Length: 261
Image 1 (cartoon, rainbow, N blue to C red):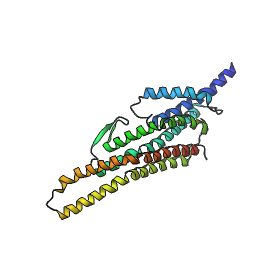
Image 2: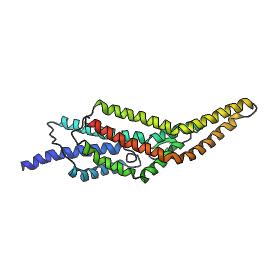
Image 3: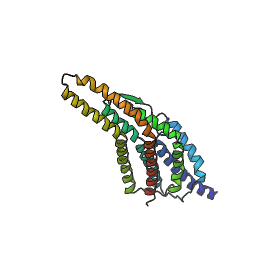
Image 4: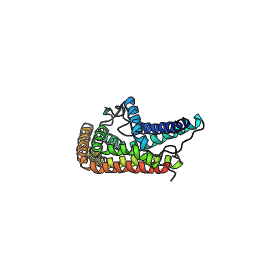
């Protein structure tokens, strides 16, 4: 009888911590965290995955002497899940940022559309590239990588053993900087080409001052931008490889930082 009670006292906290970390991952991970997936579905998915994974996970000997210790452990597991998911999503969103840079250079930064994945308005070029990215992601079975992460992170860092250090925060900040750099690199060809168009328009305005340059500039830049956008689809596979590798590297580095390595 007492053995059963002691066993329950060990299993229930471990199950709770596993569920909390998975919930944090599903809250922040790309695609799985989008508002089009309701909170009820997300909670049910986290609970179902917890039931499936918990028997096969290595369980540490967790003993909490007070409710404060349990609350601290739950908070730490939630932060771990959020940091893993957020770092992955930041890299995923770099394509959307690249579309925003390109749309601003084309002169259609104000042409926003409703994004069902974020329940907000984003530039139309960002929406186009983001939808293409989602299609690529499912085509190469990237969703399997996300579900594998839900299991592998417990193998690397069992519940109750993680250590949140300064390096974890630095990795998250560095991920944001890398994603911004990737976004600028992705949009750089279009930006440079459109700058050349701006230069040509400026020379034309000086040579032909009687020409109504403002009536020509916007349609010309939009047309050239659309041509560059369509041409850039051939490079999208290469860009996607960079995003995909960045997600994997971010997951690995973040997990290593939680081990205190």
